[in-house]
Amino acid sequence: MVESSPLPEGTVREEVERITEFVAAVFASAGIPRTQADLVADVLVAADLRGVRSHGVARLPYFVVRLESGVINPAPDMRFDQRTDTTGHVDADNGLGMVAAKMAMEEAMAMAAARGAGFVAVTGSNHFGFAGYWANLAARRGLIGIAMANSGRRTTPTFGTESLLGTNPMAVAIPGAAGGTDFLLDMATATAAVGKIETALREDRPIPDGWVSQYSSPAALDQRGVLTYDAPLLPLGGEGDETGGHKGYGLALLVELLCGALAGSTLADRIRGADGSAPAAMGQFFGALQVAGFREPNDVHADMASTFDTLRAAKKTPGQDRVFIHGEPEAIAEEENRRLGIPITPALLDQMRRLDKRFELGFDW
Image (cartoon, rainbow, N blue to C red; front, side, top):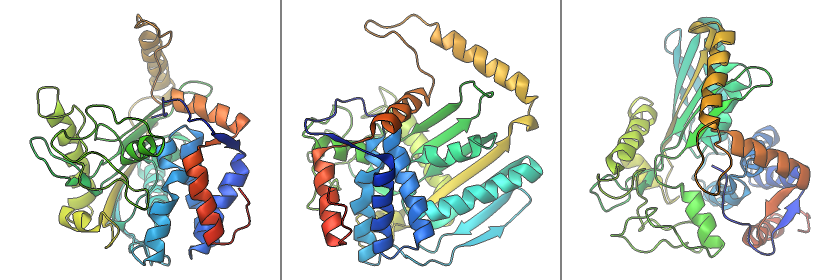
């Protein structure tokens, strides 16, 4: 979701190409092959372009710390195992999550092209960026795309008071007709993603009620600028079950099982690896389906457009003049950020300068 808060004073704009080259250079300096570094840079910068600042360049320290400490394998032997005509499994060998995600979604799309559908579970992975990137990869090829990922030690289950589950994001993309509106839902199953809380803290903004358990310590950043683990995030719906917290917990557990038990790793592994002292043991799940496997695409697209028109015509709340379809705010943000440049806040600029100096990249931010 696009960050809705105003950009802090002192924010500057930088060209997309320069930011992308910088991110790729950081990963290459940290020991990642250049082609893979370019992929990771594309994923992270895509988040910033779409206004999802919590999942963009701000995530660089997360990766650098883990690569330098050996917690992420920079040269994994990733393997795909075809299990049936429409399902398979990737062992990511503790490599970068973006690289594993690209392999898995490519295999899912190939199965969808040949058989109508394809699903791949991934084990032994790491953070893969924002889920919508991978679902949209399928949508750009005319396929319905599904992507989700688990992690650990971030969200409390309903009636719990400790961080156990991850924020467990999930995304679904359904392509519209040429020139029409695509649907792209990309959401955490916690009330807020970790990166959004970290972004708020970096920018000295208050954490909204309902993001973190009232029975925990206040949300705070550690010396690396990472959210500490003693402030459990709440599932969608908030504390308890009166406002539907049990539903968000159920969604988080669904993602955990599809990306953990189905892929072949335990929640206990992810809890141990959450702080970067051990492998993250993350799992992911990807799907691709042919629209034509259900109905004629033109008929599907016509019904999508009719549904969107009905929703857009809804009566608006005071101060609002538009009802958006999921993916539209991000598309608007991307157009603006490509035109004006990616916003770099003062806190992020300081972080980039430290990385630039450490790796002697010479970007002179």
